[in-house]
Length: 259
Image (cartoon, helix red, strand yellow):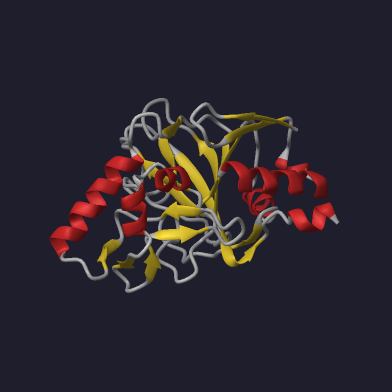
């Protein structure tokens, strides 16, 4: 397995691995790499739905989703995102977010597999939430560290969320599902969210992934956020996404490996 860091300061491309045949040592390396880099890009994979679910289990127990139009009834672990409604969910996630942030225990890991790629459009943007916090002015860091945000469903999270494994703080905000900042007026909340949106998108801070057939991208949702870009139904694209439950995640255990 070869690892090459991406040039944006987070994320890494992994080569020389077939996730269908990953042994325990390879799984440990993948998990430790995800914990360090926040994002893994693994090209040239080939999955059936069963094989994708099995590969997801290298990182933990998958979440399940209700079956609706465009989904795979026999595979509730797979959430299909597509350019056409008959193929999956459309027009989703076109704002900075981390999957499952609406849960009281946020979804820690997302895993995408490119089943059908488009020739044009549909790229996904990623940004480093830990660097987003680290690059704030100290007085703004101090202010943000005291704030909490409320999702539209009432779930509350700190604006500065510490990673449950590493303890590194991250600027954690879902710009589409957050109702506001606790204690702030709607206008003040909107101004803060707009400022965070711009900060996530600052020059040099984002990685843009153009999907190729067989691409796998794995994201630590507590380290990076992502944003979908527009795609037209005139071109067909399908991404199969699986996610790991907070109570089932497998983080790399450096202490155990050192013992």
